[in-house]
Image (cartoon, rainbow, N blue to C red; front, top):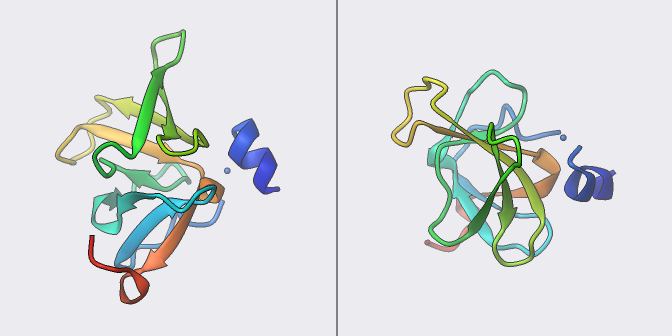
Length: 113
């Protein structure tokens, strides 16, 4: 299941998790998102408005409607970024992330970042 979602763009579990912590890459453990950047977009997938600087690579899709996001450390597919959807977030972006591509680490188990 992880391979299907992580490498073949499939989805899962963190959509409704809103506790304090960090979301790391499921493939290599690199910290990707602070929980404070997560918001409810209503799309059924975890949504974030920004990642840690340098942690996420972006590759525009050929159709120009969205941008693929991958882990900068291991290249694992995370999902896509959408801009200009009108969400009340500081960046006007929605990082739509596959749950299986990330691993949530609660704040009490996370070293200070």
